[in-house]
Length: 221
View 1 (cartoon, rainbow, N blue to C red):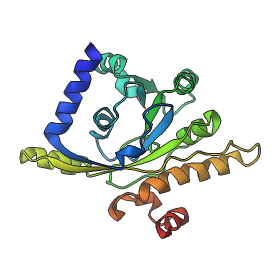
View 2: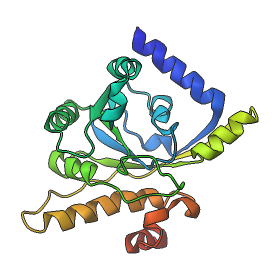
View 3: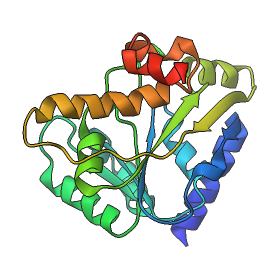
């Protein structure tokens, strides 16, 4: 019962502060595991998963520092949040993620690992690429536009809702990692995810990936 109440409250909060437009929502599978991979511009980003996804079997890894707060640990228990060490090998969290994916759950993750401080994409970490290539689940790139903290909080001061656009991309899979040049290939996989997200974003938000050759190829097609 608690999770139903919390999810309703989150959806009410999102509706209260934002006008959310979801583009291509039909591309989200109704069953089966996949990674819902997004860029990360502001605090509101994580709440959008509870607003958009019509499934209960999704989970969100977030930085372990937030688990230090009793209230957030309580929320995490009811909202399928996994607190993960971003700077060291967190074997326990990794095993839990792989187990959940094997059970058919949905991983909601921002490969950048933290929200952008300059409202532009930053270089992503290889975690989701490694997991996707290892567990062979598809990735759905998701672009969030309009969720910048500056815009959101500025509008709140004026009692105005923020226009947010969520664009769902095409699902794709990554090949298994080769035995040689793994780090190089893993970076290519990570860039693939981020460039697919960047292609759906306004140019001003593309940041680190704005001049990437792979982004140019995607935009050309």
